[in-house]
Structures are given as structure tokens and as C-alpha cells.
Image (tube, rainbow, N blue to C red; front, side):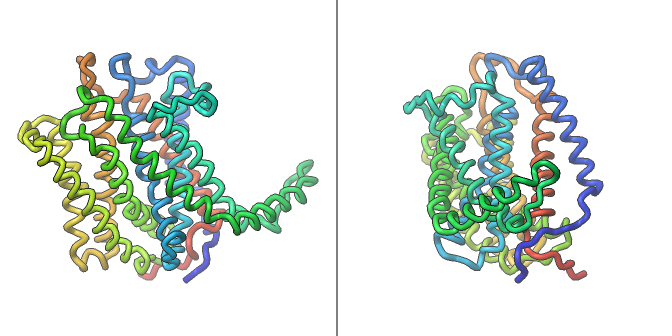
Length: 399
């Protein structure tokens, strides 16, 4: 097993240049949003106040970042050190995912300059307040958890240019002291991160409990907070498999099948719980009758459950799939896609305010902002794994 190390591979590739194009397009759309207003670049209205940015940039981003806390819990709280090699990539994905959520919120909310106000104006009766505080605190916890990776790379190597050279000693001292202190108390932040994640993952579902007349019965249920939490658990390890497989394939690293394959057994259990709860809820509430409607909402629900939950669960029951790199990647991609579609369904497809006569489809400006933020996330990920010890060694994959 190789130690985590910077990849030191060629950075400017055609893929990175494509990311830059999307980043520039997204930046232009963001400038248009802040100069012309939300209505200038979106199809949102007073009757339909949220859309793609909430459904994808916020709700989906939070869900897909679940790999960070669920992997940390497995490796550090439950003591399964065997999975230690995948904790750093999962942590990086979580850091970037939650940063992506905050950036999406800054673009989406009407007065972005007031985003700090919940820290001082507490509304303890608001679910959104709890989500805001948990996400804010957890993002800082993630940065603290990532600090030792920075210290490992730069401790003893700080060499600031020009007039900043006089600060070399101070920066070295901060890295050394911070790393030593965190090494003793990191367990506190790991536990705190797991608790905070469980709180706001479920609370995102609680947000929609106030909209019984606006959310389609296929998704509206008192169980929605539990569904959001269990789906985050279910997608955590598949997201790690998805991200790790893409990274090892793109950078031609050693396959980590020996670590990823055992995760699929845990996924069978977690995804099975989520599937059982969802199907049971349909029959207990009698909402299965809506499956015969033939509407776009019904079809979207069927795709969400059929391709995103039931099919990959059955796939993972077969050992041939669990021992195949392509097999577990396909199953993981389906699960990730199912959770993405679930969040889009809850916040966009299944959400229809009574006063909104027209259907909603995101404008080009909305899509450019989202694609630009995703490209920025991928660009920063590329920088991080290139220059920081995140991924395991860089031996070429055998042909």
C-alpha cells in the first residue's frame, strides 16, 4: 500500500481547459446575476422562488458530500483502519462539496451580503436556521480536518516569495503547532462532523414538511427527514466508489478494488434500508396509486426508484458485480444518480406551488452558473490531488 502523495502529473490537460471554459461561462452568468438581478438570468418568479440552484447546487451538493462523514465514521469512530486510504479523497470531496453548497447559496439568496446574519439573529423555531448553522459549523469542521494534509505537505518547506519571506517562520510555527494540537483532539472534530451531518441531512427533508399542498404525494410524507438521512447514508460509500474509480482511472493509478469491494456489502445494507422504507411508505400511505398516472412526475419517480435504488441494489447482490471494477462503478453511478434525481424531484419536479400556473425549466443562466460551479469544484480537486498528499501513490495501472 502506497502512502498518500502529490501526483505531480501534467496539470494543463484538455480536460482542465474544458473546465476553464465552463468556469468562465459560469463567472459571466454570476456577474449578470449580481448586476441584473435574479430575474435577469433565471426563470424564477415570486410564485416559483427556487429552482435549479436549490435542487442541485444546495440539496444535491449536501447529499453527495455525505461520503466524507460516513467514511470518517467507518475508519476513525468504528476503528476500521483498513479503509484509511479512501478517507482523504472522501474528505476532499466533502470539503469541496460543502464549499460548493455555500457558493450556490450566495448566488441564490436575494441578499447574499446578509448571509452572516443567522449567526446573530437566531430563530430557533426555523428548520432552515438549523440547516444554516449546521452547514456553517460543519464546513469549518471539514477545513479543520483537512488542515493536517496541508501541514504534512508544507511543514518544513515553507518558502514565501519576496517581501513575504519574513513570514516563513511564523507560518512554519502555525503549521507545526496546529498539526501537533489537532493530532491530539482530531477525534472531537470527527465525532462533531458526523453529528452535524446527520442533523442537517435530515433537516433538509424537514424543510419540505411545511409544503403539503405544494409537493406531490409521491414525495410528500412525514418520513421525509428520515428518507433524506437514510439516502445520504446509502449514497456515501457509492460516492466514494464513484469518485475514487474516476480518479484512479483518469490519473492511471493503482486500482483500489481491495478497499472498494468490501464497501459494497455495507451499501447493500444501507441502500436496502432506504429502499424498504420508501416502498413501505408508498403502501402505508396508499400513494402507490399515483404510479399509474402516467405524468412526468410519476415517470420521474419510477426512474428514481427503479434505476437509482432497486436495480443497483439487486446488482450488488451478485458477487460477480461486487468483484468487478466496472460492475461496482456502474452500480455506484446508478445510486449516485438516483439520489441526485431524488433531490431534483423533491425540490423541482414534485414541487408545484398552487399560484404557479406555468411549468418551470431552468434558464440558460441558471445552468451556466451550476455547470460553472461544478467545473470549479473539479478544477480545485485537480489542483489539490496534484500538489497535496491526497491520493495513494501514482504507479501506472497494469494493462
